[in-house]
Amino acid sequence: MSRPVDLANDIGEVLLTEEQIAARVAELGRKISADYAGKNLTLVSVLKGSLPFMADLMRQIALPLRIDLMEVSSYGGTATESSGLVRIIKDLSASISGEDVLLVEDIIDTGLTLNYLVRYLRGKNPASLKICTLLDKPARRLVEIPVDYQGFEIPDQFVVGYGLDYSERYRNLRFVGVLRPEVYSSLG
Ligand code: 5GP
Image (cartoon, rainbow, N blue to C red; front, top):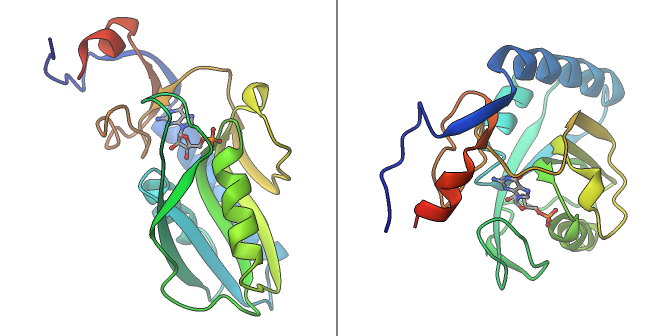
């Protein structure tokens, strides 16, 4: 039986408030601005979960930059587990050859999705390729991923909000939180 999504009451615990996220994104933006001065910065983000992070981060970077968007889906997994089998739904719009690419991710969990993307993007001959993730769950890593910029390390919990979904819902929450357990069993 499916129940209606109740944005206000389905969250059991707020892990990161809107204010905490904004402060950290501003810090990351300052660091990236310093590190990429004089370079050909292209931010590549991965839809849909990274959308709010990308939008906020790019406005905290005080440098000329380009953006590009990819969309991937992992198949063979479940609503809360990725399988590592990645399908590209939307590819880059422009060449990144010679660009200093910063891959902007919402969350790194097992690392399988990112591992695939890094290999894919390296094949396009960027001048450099680094990784910026808002959230990092290192406890669940299955492949080693060099994370250059990390917003927050979080425990091994499935989180939603600020772009992250459960069954395509909750992306529009302004904070990152954990769903009440009963939501998983009842939302179809
Ligand atoms: P990975 O391949 O690193 O295991 O997973 C990457 C993708 O799985 C993320 O881009 C995200 O779409 C999804 N994912 C991993 N952990 C979470 C989580 O805690 N919450 C949500 N909503 N998605 C997650």
